[in-house]
Length: 145
Ligand code: ZN
Image (cartoon, rainbow, N blue to C red; front, side, top):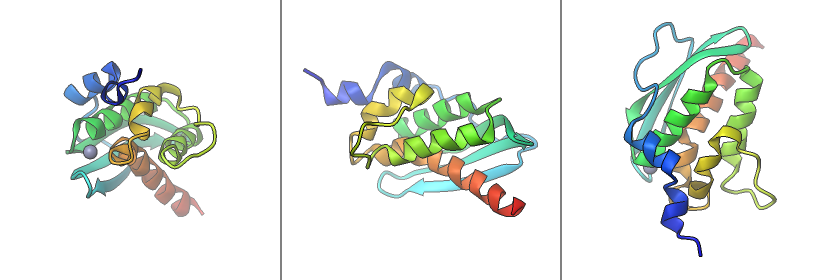
């Protein structure tokens, strides 16, 4: 028997939702993107400091439900030191997960969010930060071209 609420609010998710990491402005940030989820009222801005192909630091600002805050917190925590391409792969996996019919993609360190992705009304709360990440890095890719 699986309890859908328990699946959604995994301990890691609850912990990050209660005490989000990397919340606030990011000194020297090179990339930012603002996204919102009108269904739930979540709004967040993701900040990145990118040096060459590597993300040096990440933070987020904004407000929203526990899941939105938790996913932003978890995402920013694993971005530092990550290659831009690897970060984009991870963001795409997360953003495409809710609609995916085939075997679920590997979510790597964001695996605790999987339970939320199966809840249609809340999935976007969990993918919002990844959308912001894609958006921030996509702007950069266009500037380089
Ligand atoms: Zn939400």
